[in-house]
Amino acid sequence: MNYLNNTYDVIVVGAGHAGCEAALSCARLGLKVLLATLDVEHIALQPCNPAIGGPAKSTLVREIDALGGEMGLAADATYLQMKTLNSSKGPAVRALRAQSDKRQYSDYMRNVIESNENIYLRQACITDLLVNDGKITGAIDEYGIEFTVNAAILTTGTSLDGKIWVGLQSYSAGRLGEKAAYGLSDSLRKLGLELKKLKTGTPPRVDKRSIDYSRLDIQPGDEILSFYSFRPDRPVRKQYPCYLTRTNEETHKIIKANLDKSPMFKGLIQGVGPRYCPSIEDKVVRFAKNPSHHIFIEPEGLGNYEAYIQGFSSSLPADVQVKMLRTLPGLENAHVIKPAYAVEYDYVPAVQTTHSLMSKKIQGLFLAGQINGTSGYEEAAAQGLIAGINAFNYLNGSEMLELSRSSSYTGTLIDDLVTKDIQDPYRMLTSRSEYRLLLRQDNADERLTPIGHKIGLIDGEQYQRFTQKQENIQREIQRLSDVKISASEEVKTILGKYGEGIERGMRLAELLKRPNINYDILKELDEETNNLNLSRDVYEQVEIMIKYDGYLKRQTAQVEQAGKLDKFKIPDDIDYMSIEHISSETKEKLDKIKPKTLAQASRIGGVKPADISVLMVLLERHAVARK
Image (spheres, rainbow, N blue to C red):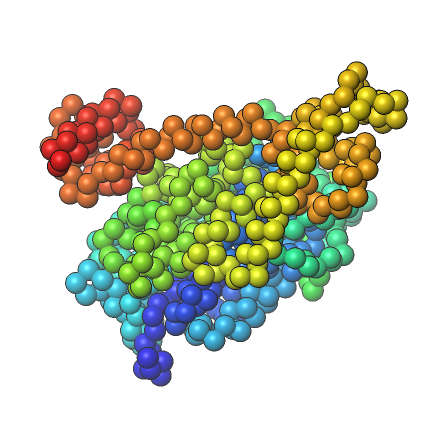
């Protein structure tokens, strides 16, 4: 293959979090990749919150790592603070969050990209896709240069026909200081794809030297560190605090007095904004009875003086933003470095793609990230990894990787995108998964590392570490189920410290089921347990699996029950419009999405249980007729 003639296996358009994972997975599997980005200085940029993880999102990052992706390693290498959220709650909602040094994160990822000999980086705006006989054959950039490829992965973020708003002023841009991507939207429309508008936004950045930290509540990181990657020897770095302040009556008064200067409230922005990350003016209007809203002050990095004002997204004019900020305790003298802004951009509703993230209309065209209607770095990276793997599978004629809802948050995310009519930027939440107790951040490797190894993204050494860990977990569960502890005075004294007691001998596993007892207490009670010196990632999973055994078995049974609908495969050539006894609206939705199984059909918004019953009868008749 002659790369001087601009011929590659695959082109990845965009080098954000989705683009980086897509390019790396393709390249690591042996494909020659052209990675085209509007600005090579902005690879893996964190244009909004300088952080990775949080509720549900941390599970996505762990899943990316378990499959052989890079985000977890990058977050571990560049954190300013590591903190486990919801640590006092159940394991299904515990979440790791890393405050990142955004420049170090971007530099780390760029170095990984440029160190891969299969990736060819190019600063270019791709304006057109070339298709022949329904298949991707090439792409053209803004200078008219043509690239020959057999697959394309679009990860355009907020750049696609992007427009930024600050007050009633607007200009063409994908992000502050970066041009928009033009031409590609028209190309996609000509190819028969439907595009719509979404909107997102970001808070102002202020000079951290202008903040009075004595008036803020400090938010420190964890004393005992956790990491995203399941790989060993993660770096221990100095931790830096975040801070908390609050809006007040004066803040709200200024916002309400200037709503006529908001492009959202004036109806100038067509795109729908994120439901779970609203602007501060939207919060004040929607939650009018709330006298105050939390605002977090977060460092952007060690190499600059910027502080990120989390929870203060806005599209109000820059001068109004300054007045609002200066009502916050600790920010009375705040100097704004960058104003907040809203950005409106094109996206391609993902009902037009399959669970592999390939377009239903164009073979070899994959879409990942915000172009599919999501928000968040983690959601984008997970999609990018899957799109990259499946671009490789497409080019090699292999079976597509389509993760199920019961296997992962990644599978849940993609299933929601391709089967539901998403109206606002999609954010992964623990509540979106009906199997969240099974899909925890701690067991992502158990669920997905065998898949990553089979694909070829998890090497033999890492897989051997994984299998050893699983053996250690099972061995310890069995040991705790066998070992019995006596009701001695020493044992009673130790248990009394924790509000517990026993009157008879008891197996350690039975004792561990008690809410007040954890594995560290077992170490005090049993010398053998203490001397085993198991790693924390092993004994934490042991504790969860024993303590929540009944719940885990119940949810596993739910997975098995739901799997019955997955066995009902729907033929590709089924004519939904001719089916009787279901509504026209349901027919149109089924015909548009074309689910592969009854399980997928049941999750389409508006499809009723009665409709599924009709389909089941038809499929059973079809199966009988074929015999």
